[in-house]
Amino acid sequence: MTESANAISILAAGEHVVPPMTGRPHGRFTRMVKAPYFNIALLVGCGIFASTYAQTGVIGLYPFRFLLKDKLGEGPLRVALFMQLASMPWNLKIISGIVSDAIPLFGTRRRHYLIFSSLLAGLLWLAVAVVPPRFTPMVIMAIIMNIALVFVSTISGGILVEGGQTFGVTGKLSSVRVLAMNIAGLGVPLGALLATRALGVSAMTAAIPLFLLFFIAVFLYKEKPTAKRDPKIWKGIIVQLKIALKAKTLWVAAGLLFLVQFAPGFLTPLMFYQTDTLHFSEKFIGFLTLIDAIAGAAGAFFYVYFCRRLSLRQLLFGSVFLTAALSLLYLGYNDKNSAILIEAVYCFVLSLAQLPLFDLAARATPKGSEAVGYSVIMSVWNWGLFCSDLIGSALYEKYHMTFKNLVWVNAGTTILVLFAIPFLPKLLVDHKEVCEVPAAD
Image 1 (cartoon, rainbow, N blue to C red):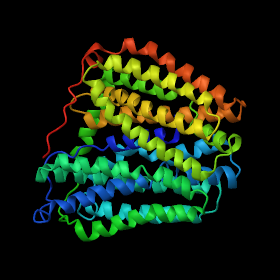
Image 2: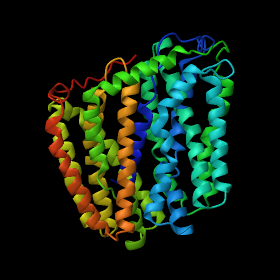
Image 3: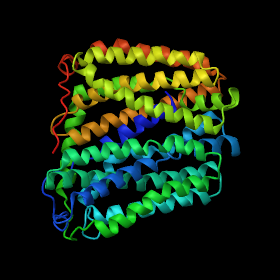
């Protein structure tokens, strides 16, 4: 899996684990009723953009990687370990939703969480750039910074749901969210271009949107400080967890997603291969990630066509087979021209191929515990990615497996997942999707 493909997975996983905010609007938007829709859209758009763009796996992906590789002399395994540990808070995102719902901050469930988390995340990004340039202090600071970003993302999702339900603009705000995430994804190629500069430049670039969000939240977001602690929400979450734990279909689907992601990956080894063997510059790698992003977005549009005509089981067979087969294209990854062609084709098909897996995750989530169930299944997905990158990097560094041999291992282990698809429950995978486009609000 390539860098941008990993970023797409992180973005998708990160944004779907926000617990939906149910019930009354709690008076949060009572003072915003007279405000235009623009105010809420601005909050949601800026919140989603800032929390996505500023992730260590987006704007920080290449600056951190090149710093660790070129200046600190770390190998593929340590580089992969740093990136996965730094992003670990996103695997536990549901906790931030539970905390903000159950424990008001200065009498509010959204406003002060958004104000303090955006300010703290921006300051912590700057702190990451000034801590001693060593593995341990940098990864600790990056983890803490990502915890703050998780709260920014979760609160922004809560504002989207509550504002959409209160004013009847859920569809419009969801469109703003998707647009903001897609624009934020451009932080990956931008980070590659900034990787040649000091880490402080990337840190400032990441912090600026967070500081802007802080001022927007202070001056535009008004919430009456009347929220009280809700002890019942903890009981509700426990009940939902019990339902999720007993759901066999959920764990069968989670197991399949884990196996797909678990195949030894070449995410980090690819960067070492690009720079050490092919001698690609950071600027050219940034150009490749831009191509990846465009190709991946194009691939996602075609899923609507296929999901109307094929059952999910057929789509899953095609998804796993194409993921394995198309990865073999990297055997011809030998120069700039082949790199451009292979990255474009692979990311186009991979984006198309990953959507049935997310579809399966949504279908397998038990009714009544959608937030917790989906959080569980996406956490399993992220843990599979975590293991994949570390195992692939270990094979590349410790066991001196060549990049192209690693491609063969990745393809071979991925294709084995085909044997697991027949065991998926028929109720989940043997019907076609309606794929209707929701009407505008």
